[in-house]
Length: 301
Image 1 (spheres, rainbow, N blue to C red):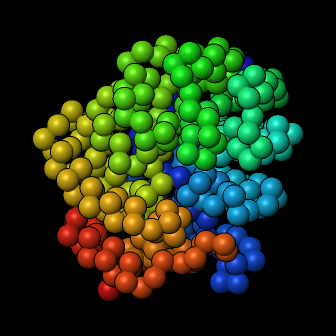
Image 2 (tube, rainbow, N blue to C red; image 1 turned 135 degrees about the vertical axis):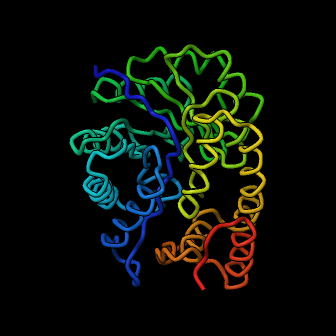
């Protein structure tokens, strides 16, 4: 198996722009999304995550997004596609495709529609580990999977050869803190809950998967640099105070719709989410624009 990559910095879970009719991925805008993140100095990117509406795309579309993003990044930062699916066969297919396209790792949520037992989860990830030669990031999101994990279960995951990381989106600060302090180094932990980003970065995370950072990557990187690179806690607290109202506003609406609205407000129009998700109403965009201005983020108009 390959050696572990070093992941550091902010990893935005990229939005997926669709054409105006919603029928296909808008490649040109997707490349603009990638450029916007790279210009801000992000540490890596996550295509086809929850923010990217993977649940609203076909397998071929997910592969296409991975290809476009990988080509646009062109080795500048690690690309970690989300390749979780409802079956082991499809997960392996998507993961092998990501590996062929230069992915540094894959992020994988366990099957989540038909409830799976813990032995079935382990069998799923062992089969995936045997099928690819790049690391796996276990996507821990019990709100979607109905599968909260114990410390012992995390240790069982860490014992699988290719599982090197976990993205914790449980919003459970106590467990997140335990993972940072008590898990062996083999299973490196990313924070995946936006409102716990400050806690995660000050508690041991070297990287954070942050969906809302799509529309304020510069401010997100500023937070990371203050905490990790400069170790300037007062400066970091000041940045976090600016970020908090943005995230509470995003939380008022469906996440994908809110993040796409944020992109539009800052001058990166990425179109609407795909049905059944609905676009953000005008009053939400206006409120979000006001909050962004107050936080020092440049907005369009």
